[in-house]
Structure formats: structure tokens, C-alpha cells
Amino acid sequence: MSTTPLAPGASPAEATAVAAERRWTLVVGAIIALLVLMMVVTGLHWASMPPSRVETVDVKTLHLRGEFVESNLGTALDPDGKVVVRLVAQQYSFVPACIVVPAGMPVTFRGTASDAIHGFIVGRTNANTMLVPGFVATFTTTFHATGEQLMPCHEYCGTGHEAMWARVRILPPQDFLVRARDGERLDCVAR
Ligand code: CUA
Image 1 (tube, rainbow, N blue to C red):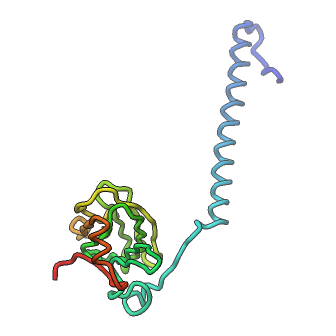
Image 2 (image 1 turned 90 degrees about the vertical axis):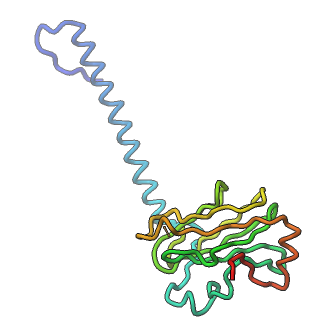
Image 3 (image 1 turned 90 degrees about the horizontal axis):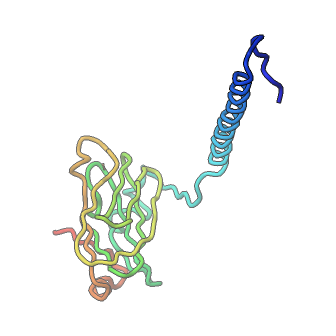
């Protein structure tokens, strides 16, 4: 490493200080360069490879045809034994507003939004997602305790946001299986 020219008559202590300063400048410069490189690489990576499993849905025909028509919302026990909850979020409610699921069985949620970005979390469980218009959010989870949980919207979606919530009723699996027959769509909305 070349030495910085010092003022004539500089002491050896000053020379050491300048050398240390120089080394430090190089180290900091290398750290900054590494951080910038990481940002560039991850940015390009995400731009070139969108997240996998992106599923789109046409907002304009959401209520008219396809998976998210009203008669298909709620909880279904598929012939292969899978439990699937389908729901739609809109300003300012979830459809259905009361969801029935079994405890101790994997439950797959499939949801979307019809107007703004919404989201939900079920009580203190790890069931938590955003619902974005035009996209299907899906995840699978298992509820361990029976009982009722609140499911609030957790993305600010307008003036009615804080009043937007649903309930999730978690039944013992045998009770759920008795109710869920013939591919019916279940919910617990009072009628
Ligand atoms: Cu819907 Cu906040």
C-alpha cells in the first residue's frame, strides 16, 4: 500500500495514524461496495424470477363464474379428503363471514379480494395472508384447538377497515366430517 504524503516533519505517530485511517477507508469502501452489489443482485434476481405459484383470477367476473362465485364459497370437503376454504374479501366484509374448519386436519385456504387489498389473520394462529385483487392467495395450515377465533382484516382498506372481520369456528374433526358431506359448502353464518 502506498503511503500518503505527510507534511514535512510529521512524527512517526502521525504516519501510523494516517496509515490506519487509509486502511479503514478501504475496509468501509469494500463493505459499501458489497452491500450495493447485494442490492443489485437480489433486485435483478427478483425482477427476473417472479415468486412461484402466482395464480391470477379475473376480478371483473369474480362474482359471475369460476371458483369464487357465491355458491362455491365456504368450506368444502373434497372427494380426496382435502378440506378447502374459499373466501372473498370486499369492503368491508369477508364472504362467508363465519368459517367452519376442523381441528387436527390440514385446511387449505383459497382467497381473493374484489376491490381493494385486504388481508386476514385467524386469532393467534399462523393462518395469515394478504388478499390482493386479481390474485389467489393460498396456504395450508392445521388448527390444533377447537373453539371460535376472530379473523380481522389486517390490511388498511378504507374507512370501514377496523370493522371488517369474520369468525372462524374450529370443530372437532368428527363433528366437522358429519356436517361436511356430499361436497356441500359449509359456513356458520346465521340465516
Ligand atoms: Cu379489509 Cu382492512
